[in-house]
Length: 293
Ligand SMILES: Nc1nc2c(ncn2[C@@H]2O[C@H](COP(=O)(O)OP(=O)(O)OP(=O)(O)O)[C@@H](O)[C@H]2O)c(=O)[nH]1
Ligand SMILES: [Mg+2]
Image 1 (cartoon, rainbow, N blue to C red):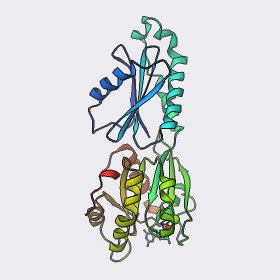
Image 2: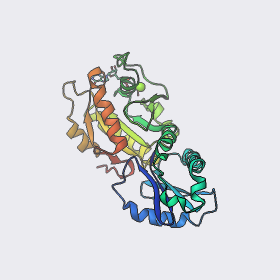
Image 3: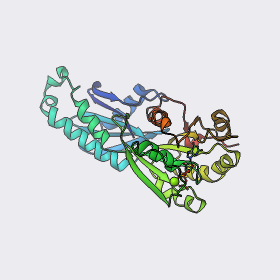
Image 4: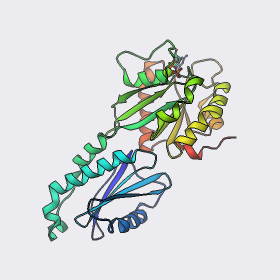
């Protein structure tokens, strides 16, 4: 997922667009560091550096430094393409002003729309992980098929499924990966979830299911997506004996949110949770940092 872009020339900021602010690092200090490396790059070469769960992809053109901040976990290849499109777009509009002193008095803000369109073209990969029957496919359909309503029957998913989700997530579009949760499919997860940015751990809020999640799902997720962000869904809150979201959070070591995925009324809540995870406006965990008892 692309989070920010910064464009610098002669130590001045020409343009910046921060879609999801970075609360973990001192952005100004990081930008100084990255732009100093960026200045040394040959024209149109792309390089990158990683700090914690972030990746800074940079390019130097017309003595102008372009730096895109993304999640470390996401696909570097797609961001290379995005970088090339962004710089081309910027040059088409502003090449002539960059060649003289005119850039000092130019308004670069119209670049924002074009940049956001580029961001929208790379779907953010969201992985729904959890044991069979916990409600992953129900959640997928609750989000993506509002006219039909969530399924009431349990039809196990083979391997995995995916669907695009466009909602109130602008400029992001989500590609939802619904994993098959039966034990025989878990060994396939590694291949399917590669380069996922966001993980939703789905539980049916029972003690046995939480134990399975920690024993079987955690090793795969931690191994494959250590820098991804995760929340847990404490699903099936309507069933007698369901553990509360607080208990689920405590047992899983991941903030958990209560849900009843088979009820249409919960669609808004579900979309808000996804939005909060993408924009980092709710409590979440970084997969590699989840503590297991
Ligand atoms: N009572 C109750 N049932 C639910 C809830 N959410 C989902 N279900 C039902 O639980 C079953 C779960 O089915 P799926 O969503 O297909 O399960 P899944 O996690 O995709 O399972 P796999 O594909 O095998 O990994 C369905 O019968 C749903 O209707 C809920 O909140 N409460
Ligand atoms: Mg399923």
